[in-house]
Amino acid sequence: MTQKPFSLKQQKEFWILLVFFLCIACYFLWPASAESMIRKQLKALASLCSFTQKSGIIQASLASEQLDHFFTGNVSVVLKSPYLMTITGIGDIKSKFILAHTKFLENLTIDFRDIQFSSLSSNSAVVSCTLELAGVGSGENFKEFQEAELQLQQIDQYWKISHIKQVKAIE
Image 1 (cartoon, one colour):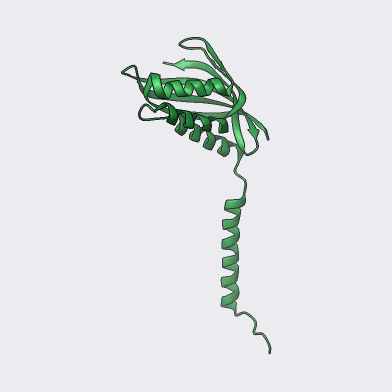
Image 2 (tube, helix red, strand yellow; image 1 turned 180 degrees about the horizontal axis):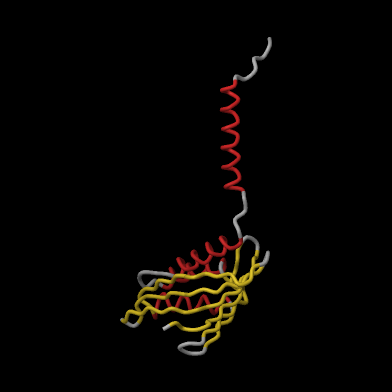
């Protein structure tokens, strides 16, 4: 039994399908750039920290456990305005997160804007951005813009924040 060669039409269809599947494979298997991964992490962090109504202590505690994906264990946050404060460690961040969700704020929306990469290597990055914070606290609406600098480290597949410094409050 002899095998018939592919017709010209069949060969053309085969090559079109092959190129199509290779393009799809490259799209899903090609590693994302560090910048796009960091932007995605910051968007996910903003989403986690934003809320539309006060949470119960259990719900806020469960949500705070997800912060481990975004911060190193020894993270430090330096705030300058309206008062000088340093928050050190993931435990301190989690407790402030729970307090904000259960006691001090009725709702909060966070957005990272104008993300600029001033330094980027294979496992560390320095990012400047504007934080937009809007919500209701103590019955009053507020909207603030803060200029911040973030230092990140790549740990496993996550880019984790190791240091946040408030540069200035934007009036």
